[in-house]
Length: 113
Image (spheres, rainbow, N blue to C red):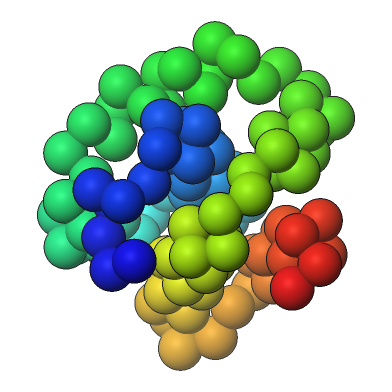
């Protein structure tokens, strides 16, 4: 699985939301972070990112909702792709912030990766 065309709707919704949470964890989104997001989204062909983010925002209201969504993703290749995207975004500054690393590690633990 090399791009988002292989992800199902639920996986895309989760990825869009996880990206949002990752960016918000750094405080106000810096212009460079938004540029990196645009590059990642374009590189993956995530042209409907905004639509999936809106669906995430409508459906996921609590951390428990986020965990439930994560635990209900089952395709190993999708999990790998999502994890890679999140690490790529987190490492844009050369290192992941403690908050970014905690989020990604929590997701991996839910997936037992």
